Length: 89
Image 1 (cartoon, rainbow, N blue to C red):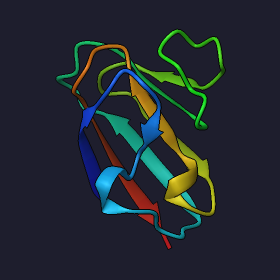
Image 2: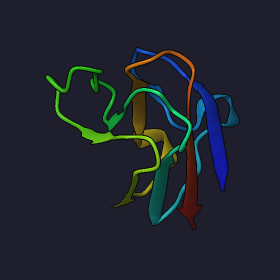
Image 3: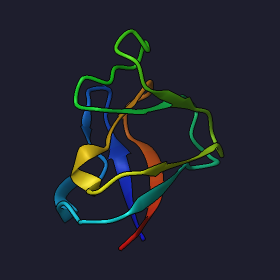
Image 4: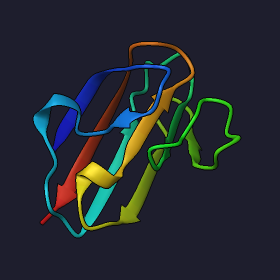
């Protein structure tokens, strides 16, 4: 498991500086104390949802089957929000 404690308002890899990890599935949770939304998608995900993606409110959870954490991008509607994730190898 890992976390990203400073998700910005532009698309960034969920893995941040920790690097990409090969996996089978990723479970993602927006931290319960977040004040905005976390958007999850590909490298074009945006905070207005115009480029698709899944919107998570504080405390929401999403799971996806994917082969690498480097393929998952996040963006926050409020700068420096927190997201936690577990990847299964």
